[in-house]
Image (tube, rainbow, N blue to C red; front, side, top):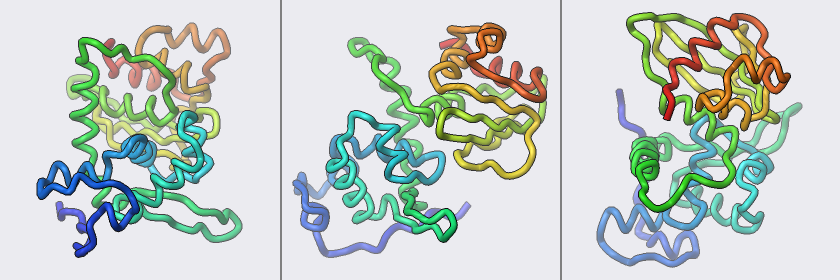
Length: 233
């Protein structure tokens, strides 16, 4: 696989380029933190890992982030090449933000932070989560099933977001937001907290369906297999 193109180097210091403080140290870690270490910056990146987002979608996913700070983080991350803006043509129109290939290379950083954070001895996992967080959790904790493989495509609608999940021969092949093209074997509609409770096995699939909190159309057995592939944590 070819490596992602790294943005061209510039003689400008990161702090001068994006108008913020810099550590001013000739260290790769300090340089990385100059680019993505500001408060909320990595969470903005997190919300782009499954696909492009509009400004309003980022606001909805990160309710604790004020509009002025969000706008500044987007400018900062664009200035250093982590994300880019894209203008959609009519009739959709509007502007979206998406990770560059280089920005997408932060994926192993998120994997390491997730593992490290879940083992924290002092800070509990409290507070809100976004719909993307639920689907990223599915992607992170899905256990391949080579001994009992199945192939299925899922369309998952969670409030304002729609996701497409693909399992091929027991392997999780794709999780993407906004990929609503083509038929699916199973259609799920719910709110993200209900789906999170089902995926974490805090609530049974049958209970969520019986209560009307989650609607499944199509291959119910494929949905059961998807949930069973995410172990209790």
